[in-house]
Length: 212
Ligand SMILES: N[C@@H](CCC(=O)N[C@@H](CS)C(=O)NCC(=O)O)C(=O)O
Image 1 (cartoon, rainbow, N blue to C red):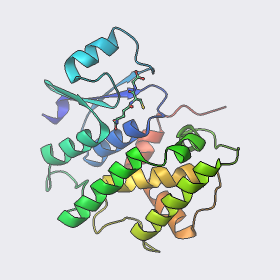
Image 2: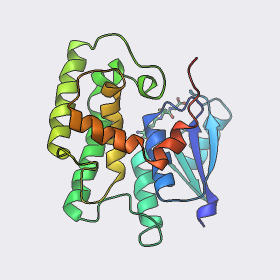
Image 3: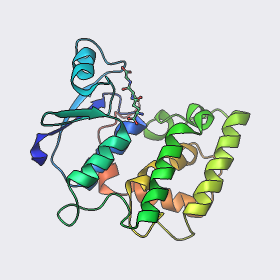
Image 4: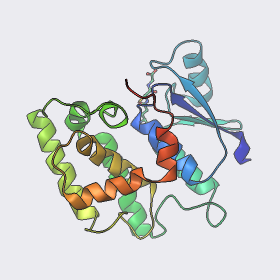
């Protein structure tokens, strides 16, 4: 039952992986409960999560007796457990586009470390970063813009024929730069802001504490 869904999240609301998982749940239009924990996850909760889900991390999805972590595992599970037509699609219908979406999401989790360091999610969800990027950060930024430029055609507000959860990850990567007023081509700004305008994203952002 969908009503058995609980998402464990960080109470700072700064985790990009929690953002991905919660937006996936919202896009699937599923009812779910939220449990917020500070990071690092304190005991005894950490041990309880490790016991039930193998890893003591957030995002963690509990669905009845099934407890597991990893943002991509969560969105893939939701896509398969709550499929079309009853629930909206969160991965592209086309197999090739689905492979590309997975490629992008996997790349964004394993690359661009300097950019992520120079422009943390706190600069997107909270106060923009004012300090200049490191040389390595600039290299990552150029690579992000090169790849995003290939994936998002001018005038498009999604990468593929169908909107997908990969759009959320790519737009967050771009928002790291946009929020700090780094140079981003206009059509990629339009693309990222279109994601930020989605109800699912707004519902996530509503939880983020406002910085004074
Ligand atoms: N690869 C994981 C990353 C999850 C992760 O690293 N979560 C961090 C917070 S962003 C965490 O829960 N750390 C455990 C702790 O701080 O105790 C995913 O995609 O979900």
